[in-house]
Image 1 (cartoon, rainbow, N blue to C red):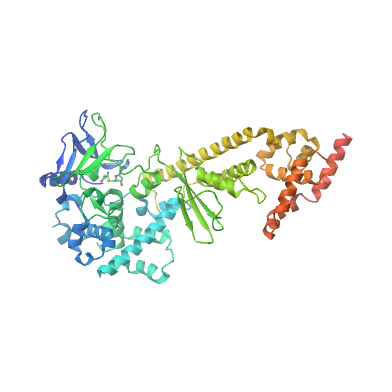
Image 2: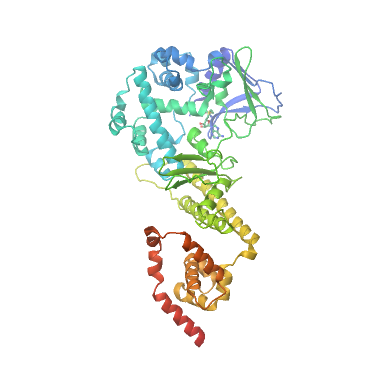
Length: 549
Ligand SMILES: C[S@@+](CC[C@H](N)C(=O)[O-])C[C@H]1O[C@@H](n2cnc3c(N)ncnc32)[C@H](O)[C@@H]1O
C-alpha cells in the first residue's frame, strides 16, 4: 500500500510544478481501491469547470522515452513499448536514474504490488484453469514476452541476468510454440518486480500493467503528429490517474490553450464525501479483472463469453455475417472459432440463435423451419448448460504450502458466481423462447407428453425400460430423447397405424436426403445395443400383458 506521506509529496510536487487541484477535492488512501479522490462538500461543478489541470511538463509520454532511448527514434511502431521500458527504467533503474528523476514523487506513488492476476501466485492462478481469463493471460504474456525480446534486440539492450533461463523458453521452442501460463507464473513468483532490475521481464510486465491500468490515449493531447499509427499510444497523466473507475460516469479530458490537460466532471452534483470517479470506458468485469484487478458484481456491462469451435469452415450459405455483427471469428480454414458475449441485457445474441437454427437444419430443409428453430434452441441450451456446469461445479483448489490471499479468493469466487448467473439467465430465456415458439405453432405440433398420455402401451414399455411411471420421470432420469427416438422407430415400423403418417412421411423425406456415414452408425451404436433387440421382446410382452390385463 502507498504511504500517505508519498501521496502528499506527489500532490505538492504536482502543484509546485503548475498543476491545479480544486480545493473541493481530497485524495485519500482506501483499503479497497488504494489512492482515491473524494469531494469535500456538496458541490455542483459547471460542465466546463476543470477540477484538475496538469501542465504538459508533468506527463510521461513517448517524447521523454525517446530522450532516454534515442536509438528508437526511427522505430515508430515500437513507441508504446519504448515508453513502457522508460517507465521500468525510471522506477527500477539504478539510483542515478530513479532518485534524480524529475518524476520521483509521482513514481513513489505508483503501487509496486499490483492486483492484476498476472501477479497472483501460482496456487491462485490454478483456480482460473479452464476459464477465458486464463487463456487471455497466457496469450497476453506470450505476446508481451515476444515484444520485450524484440524491443531489446532493436534497441541493443541486454536482458537482466535473472531472465537467462526464462529467455530460453522462447528461443528454444520455435516461434509458434505457446509457453504455458504456469511457466510464467513460476518465473514472476520467483522474481518480483520490486526485487528485479529495470531490464528484467518482471519490471517490463509491471510497467505494462501500469500503462494498461492508468495510461490515457495520445489522441487527447491534440498533437499535430498524431495519426492512425499512434493515436492509441498511451501516456501517464499524474493526479488524474489517481481517480478510480465507474461505468457510465460522464467525464471530459480536454487540452486547453495553455497546454494544460484538464479533467472535467459532467455530473450535475456531488454530495459531501462522495467519491469523484473517472470513466475508463464502459468495461466488462473480465476487463476490470485483467486490466485493473477488481470486480464489480453490479456491472451492467458484464458478459459471459461463449466460445464455440466448429470442426469446419463456416458454410458460405450461412445467413449471418459474424464479422459484421461484432462476434470475433478466427478461421484457419479447418476449424472456425466463434466467440459470443452473453450479456444480462441480451442473454441470447441473435447471431448465436441464428447460427444454431442454421446448424440444426436438415438437408431436406431449404430454409430454417420451426423444427430447426426448436432443435437449435435445444442444442444451444445444452451447450450453455455444459458451460454453466463448469462454473457451478467450481471448487476452490488450495495447496498446503501456500496460503491464498482472502481478497483474491473473493475475486475468484465472484468470477465463477457471476458467470454462472449470466449463463443461468441465458438458459432460462432459452426455455421461455422454446415455449413461445412451441405455443405459436401449437396447431402443427405434437407433444411427446401427449403421446405419452395417449399411447398407454408405449408408456407401459417405458416403465419397463426406464422405470418411468409418469412423463416427468423421463425428464428426471434424463431419457426423454432416447424415449422419443424409440417412439419414432416404433411409429415408422408400425404397419398397422395410419395415424402417424406425418412421422412416416418426414422419416422418409429425411432418409431420402441423407447419406448415412460411418460416424452416424457409431453415434447410435450404443443406443441400438442398449435397447434392441431385447426391447422388441419387452414391447411384445407389455402389449400382451396390456391386452391380457
Ligand atoms: C488509474 S488507477 C487509480 C488509482 C489507484 N487507486 C491508485 O491507488 O493509484 C487504477 C487502479 O485503481 C484501482 N481501481 C480503480 N477503480 C476501481 C474500482 N472501481 N474498484 C476497485 N479498485 C479500483 C485498481 O487497482 C486499478 O488497477
